[in-house]
Length: 401
Image 1 (tube, rainbow, N blue to C red):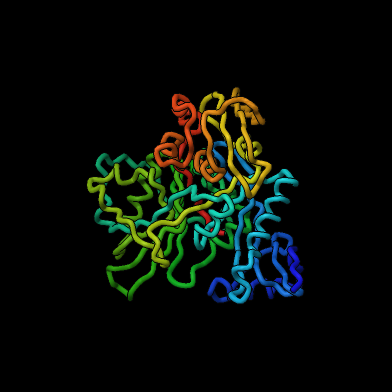
Image 2: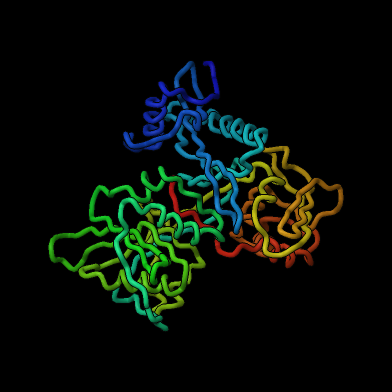
């Protein structure tokens, strides 16, 4: 059998979606949209055996913007599994990313994390789903809400974009949303329920929004399900105002909020901190998360913002992308970061997957050392690592792709 790794053509995209649907065990959707040039597939005798795509995203990276590859639609037909086709596609993809030099990080939502850990990915976000009853959302220190809410018109996308950008600007992991992504995902009308979009304003200043759906068991029943599709705020008052607004909606029995990070502070503000309870996903998992892979270590590290100046030395182990192997020295000063090879001693030794965890701020170097995810050669350097690599917030990605 002849194996060929290449992008699908426009004429082959129907087969691409059919193969992915069969591999993933889902129904092929006519609304799926992936440009052929974003694909990279394994063809056996001219027929698609494995699908793979990568969106050209821009990611918020602790106060900077980083071009990343958003890997999606990965699947192999059952009759072609265990032959290493995904491994060959991934190796080809990483090689092209490295040679191109534009995108140095790959991100994805895994069906099974174990598949991608073999390729140097690690889970850089931990995102829970919460459920709570509106009657339990009472604040310990209520703020005076001086603004008001209004419905967002269909032609006010730019307003939502401005708030979203302000909310995500200092975060890590969120992606810039194109106009098309807003329309196809965030603002797409749900198959069931009523979809609402409201913005909180103080005077002429828009300081937050919440997008949500309400599904009812029947007219007049006080057990409607409210699901928050997206929420963003720019001030503490806007945050509390949004929750007060949601709890005052009539007939709501439960509120569900997805993609909550461990550092989301809502429980600390409530009279009953245990009101939000973690619920499992439809797949039975207690949390989901974004995986990331540093394909080009020096470029990836140079793209993010660091809170303090410092010098870090480390050795990377990376058999899958051998250009990352070796000892590195990173210096950040005056808002600029340089990363170069070194022959000197290093503070720590780690696999590239652990470096992704540190770079995204998911765990600190001290925590990684305790978990034996890195080897410490100079223990006294760990506090410096913790300070330099700290991010303003726990990483999160608010979008599925």
